[in-house]
Length: 345
Image (cartoon, rainbow, N blue to C red):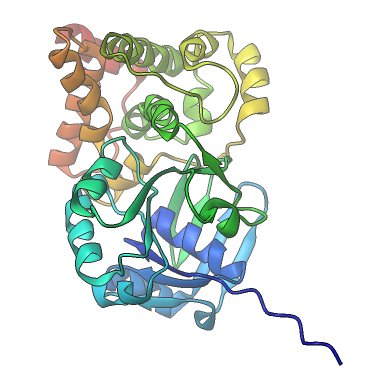
């Protein structure tokens, strides 16, 4: 008799900072047979222990994962056995999680930043000089519904820096496609430009599909993006659209199209659940700090460095900061109210 076929060996994956994105990505990987540990806050662990981990999405996904399909931990010592660390904390927690990875994770572990913004991967690389640290980009939105359920509201594939081991291909699954990319910096800047709408969606208080279906909001989106693109051009920074072949410089033009034409073009690029909302809306709703400083705030700082101004992004950032301070959730502003605040600055 011949030798028995060898079983496929999966790497040990630790999702560091498992919140909305981390629980969804980690849960999908566990559903696909990967060895996954969710490193999370105690309150999150209690919720999932009570209700289980439920994954749903815009395309009909409906998965209930039993507790024996993955591990959960609240202590950084769980990083000790990691082959891959997926960092999904908010930007403000990057330095803290980097220190924990440095202390506990083996130097052979590949560290992938699946965070918003463009600065986090550099923070991780400085803190982890002996690790293979790679940039990543998650294009889709995940809403923490409660009761252990995490709902993906928009479409898109994950991109990860090209490197040894082809880890994107190793982790890629049906329903959670991952690809390697040689120029993640341009992809991350493209995602940042699109994520500028997170703040507008949070200010509006309405679902994403409803918000971008309103030409008045789209014109504000386009104005924000035009302003940011001018700053990036002055700084010599290139961008790549993470959703379509359409160049980022053309996106503001598409946003300003009549609604019927915009919907026709957008449908080919992105699927959006009618209930989807931005992560910044969720942050305001839950009384958490937002990532406004890594989005509009970063554009404003870059503009100042170039001797430019960015009044639209500055006004939107100020409105989000005010909402954070009030702690009353999304302010449910109308687009004309936002424009009035921009003109008043």
